[in-house]
Image (cartoon, rainbow, N blue to C red):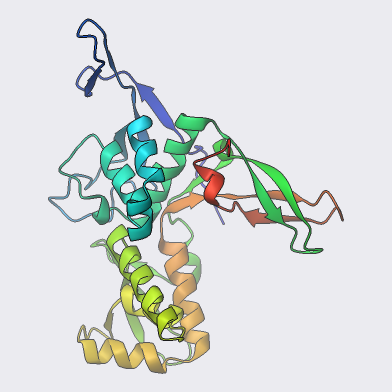
Length: 281
């Protein structure tokens, strides 16, 4: 997979327009530093009128104790909105709805926030895929690469330049139009999977497909989409999900892992565990 040469990271800015945080002593005040986070999407897939349309970066303030409170709030954690509240609090432009952010752009904000708050060294527990031994392993978050979707052509995906993409499925010979998912879609997906758990069923794949497909052979009707989702061969389902992954701008957190116990080596996705935002716990 090709990657941009630039590493993920924000450029710190001391913006005079940033909110001033005043302590109880009226003679003491300071400006919370802000940074610009590179958007994997480059603003290409936001509709005209969206504040991020055509924008290559988003300005956020650095995390403070206020955001740490959000991350530890039992109420927010129980509702599953703690991270959403943090992102909303950090974005300088309050006209931007955090739920409208593409998933890859949200991920970039989350990783940059973690780096500026606690540093780029991320030590967490990892289970070796070969021997199963659980061990502490350190990853360098500054080594994350920005993937802008440059490999989509390798699987025959056409960018429609309107936030949607087309791919011709090999088995059914059907043209499927799909879109990139946002934070709002991600929340809907999570809520659906929680409902599935209560009903003791698993619909992760069909839920994902239902969220991304917007038309089948040019037909955007719910009937056409539902029929395709529930009847496409597994080979086409796999092809479509690969097409989506290669079309989605994101941050690549794949890094090298070597087991301390059996010396097994492989590249693996950096696990974003509970200690991602709490490195000292």
